[in-house]
Length: 201
Image (cartoon, rainbow, N blue to C red; front, top):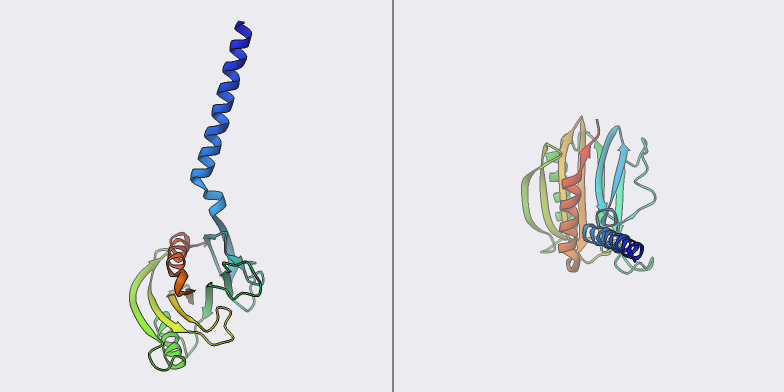
């Protein structure tokens, strides 16, 4: 009788431990929600966490020290290759040149390009404010704009968030474009990526 009670006690404790472990893993969801990317592009090493629902475009997360110097991730809510992406995220490590000698000029050029491409009232600058990424001062612009028909996100009106800052002689551009119906998801994902973005010197 005593042996049976001892066995039952051990069994109950084991079940409780298993249940607690399952509950903790469900409530956390940390490993299932985000992936960490560590990348080297154009002489700059960096890392960031991104949602697992985003897919890598043409293995852009692989460290590669030749052009293109971009990381491109996309989100497709339907998981169908025939459907257009509803969110596109990118990081570009650009060399300075006479056309873009610094991050501020790079942002000016980007905004002007969208203004010229969006004739009429299709371009709306919502904000352009200072922001600090990984301890480096830069600026962020948020605007609505149309894309060209050949764009992977389609030619519908999109909200775009673009961050530009200077780092180690390079111009860093981090951006996201999203269809209007997924703007809140894109905003949350972008803020998480910016929050976890780090340079690996």
